Amino acid sequence: MYEIVSMKELAPRVKMVEVNAPEIAEKAQPGQFIVVRVDEKGERIPLTIADYDSASGNVVTVFQEVGVSTQKLGKMKPGESIKDFVGPLGIPSEMARFGRVTMVGGGVGVPPLYPQARALRKLGNKVVTIIGARTADLLVFREEMRSVSDELHVATDDGSMGFKGFVTDLLKLLIEKGPKPDRVIAVGPAIMMKAVSNVTRPFKIKTIVSLNSIMVDATGMCGACRVSVGGRTRFTCVHGPEFDGHQVDFEGLMARLRTYVEQEKSSLRRYEESQRGD
Ligand code: NAD
Ligand code: FES
Image (cartoon, rainbow, N blue to C red; front, side, top):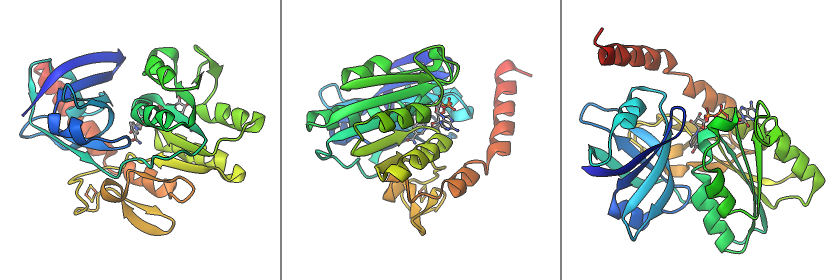
């Protein structure tokens, strides 16, 4: 069992949970994820690590309350315990002195960029960050990203903060203005990571994306997280979660992400009815 140290609402339906898991905090590296199972009957949910601290033994992740499991997790209180908290999983982000690195985060995809930006900056990279959300209220980890970036740019779809438009519109403007980044790293909705890859392709900028595939076992056995990369089938849980964005078949990924939408909706309906006592 893993004790919840803190639970904080960052934005409507977006929560940050800090869990005491010393063995994960000790080994975690940027880009990795954990799999959470709230209780005995819960499904396994993969969540990207947003921070870790070996001194306190705590691991932080940010999640959106979209389904039954994330709603159950969001209702938990400090002092309560999570049944399973497994990790760190996945291949860590490649760390080197690349030069100028532009990090692009959309919505709840922003927090996983924080440990990466911090580590890349420590290595001497110039870190330029672009973060975006539909509206200012949904923008999370702005101050955290500012603290580990040489430049921070903000975009909101409705213009309520910073640049009005998608992060990809801002990315294109910044690339055209120069200097050109040596590497772009993007985390967010699949459609955003596809759009980022399309922006950088003509400029031949290496682009790394972190895929949010559906996962079941997260050990490379079930195939649920499969994705086609450069024409080869790869399993996000063991070969990723990061891949070359110019090689990813995003249409296939997005089709797979839609597979259980109806089942998830009806499961959520049943859960909400049970919570209301209908
Ligand atoms: P969202 O739909 O609110 O989008 C966030 C931002 O992404 C937008 O403000 C915009 O700037 C950009 N964006 C969205 N659609 C775009 C498009 N068509 N073209 C260009 N840019 C676009 O995001 P959300 O509701 O916070 O959802 C976050 C998503 O991130 C979820 O789907 C979740 O699965 C995913 N996620 C991924 C990871 C990962 O490791 N890959 C981690 C956390 C979350
Ligand atoms: Fe089963 Fe990746 S989640 S193979």
